[in-house]
Length: 181
Image 1 (spheres, rainbow, N blue to C red):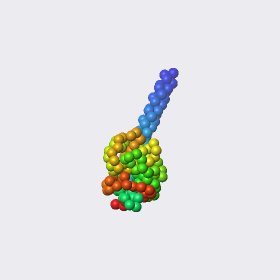
Image 2: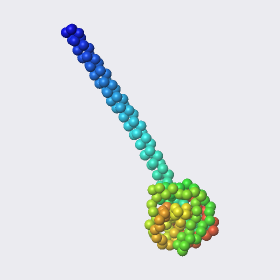
Image 3: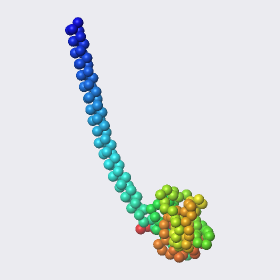
Image 4: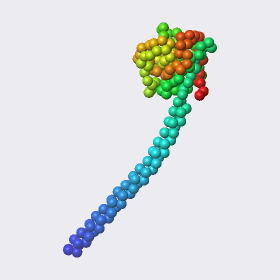
């Protein structure tokens, strides 16, 4: 009987040893696999980050100076757009030939072909002649030729860099085009 109990104890000890060995190796394998996955993931993440940074730099360079010209044939105004999504949305639609309209006593407006994306676009908080803005509720681009107050849904697109004093003279059909740097 003592021999049988001794044999059972030995079998239990061996069994516990084998299970412990398997569990330990399995955990080490998981740890090594996770470590290898982290290395691979970090390499991809670093490569992706570098590619994203390069893409962002290229995008910023390509839109660094978004200059547009608005002309009715007799009067020409040059605007520099900011780097907002709305300004980029407008820039991508150019060239446009469209009717300019009078609105109020301080602005000329036109309606771009497509709505502009105003995400991350600064609000137009008032100002004077030469501000180019987008009034999202109506979907029109506004060229201010006199002072104005802020309004809900009014986003700044840029500023006139030449002939802001000519905005009020625009009439009829206008051409809006990119100015190559």
